[in-house]
Each structure stands twice: as structure tokens, then as C-alpha cells.
Image 1 (tube, rainbow, N blue to C red):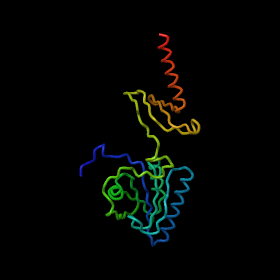
Image 2 (cartoon, one colour):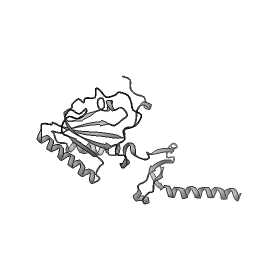
Image 3 (tube, rainbow, N blue to C red):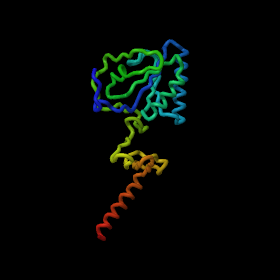
Length: 215
């Protein structure tokens, strides 16, 4: 199978971490619940963003044993991965897969396990690539639901100026600040809110008009 070209590769922005444990084991069920409670606690504290779904007390869908799905956006993938790799009980397996437009491949060719692996029953799933990305929890504004990515609209070589559209934190510019720009020159960066940017653009236009009038 040949490697995919760049235009065939999507940027994966959301992932699932599925906790697996033997349905017959009470100790494993207890440890899994303790881990889920710990995940929820760290999520509530703002340490990372990870959203546990319902607990399945037996095989459900493609999953061969008791399980629970945990959604993690790309913004917190590395932090959550490193954390759960260290706190996972030995009798709880973690299956990780991306959320792309190819659901069957996500649950077969692209899965990874912390702990013993297990095959998933996806034989009846379609192989076609869907049109839409599987965005979850859009109210959080993360992953596929993030309003704006950093988009470089101007760049020059060396230490040239770069302008990027960004979502500016409301804590810096007040509630509802919306979009703005990051102006970078080398290692120096300046964040500008949309309201300040509007004033700057208006002032620049005024200067241009005055220059034309008084030539």
C-alpha cells in the first residue's frame, strides 16, 4: 500500500481513549471507576480537558469487554497521554484511536494500546471516507470545533513580519473580545484585539487621506 500524499492526510484534532477491563473482574471494575473519577477530578480542576462518557458494563458495539470512552481534544492530547500512562492500573487497558473521517480505519489500523490488546468488531462498518469531521463537544470550542486556527496570512524570509489570526483570551482584553492578531518579529510577539485593530486600521486610513489632501 503506497504512502498517502500530503493532500490526502488530514490534521487529526480529536481522540478517544477507551478504558477496557474484564467484565468478570470486580477488582478491575473498581480500579476502572477510580481512574474515571480521577480523570473527572483533574478535568474539573482544569489540569486537562478529558470528557468521560457512559460506562459499558459489558461488550457494546465494537468493544469486546467492559469499557468507557474518554474524549480528548488535540490541545490536551500530549498532557493526557503522559498522565494516564503513569496512573493507569495494571488491570485496566487503554485503547487510543484518532477521530478522523475514516471511522473503520480509526478502529483498526490506527489504534494503539496501553496494556493487553484486543480486536474490535468492525467488519460491518463502512470503509468509505465521510465528508464531515466527527466533532464532539462543540460547546468547548476545542478540537474540530475551535473557532479559528493560527493562519499565517503574511510571511517573509528571515525575521520578517508574520500576521496570524488567533482567538484572543477574554481575560486579556475583556469579555467578548473575539478575534485579533498576533504580530511577530523574530522572538517578539504582540497580541492585538479586534477592537484595537479596528482603531489602528482607521487611523492608518485617516493618515493616508490626509497625505492625499495635503500633497
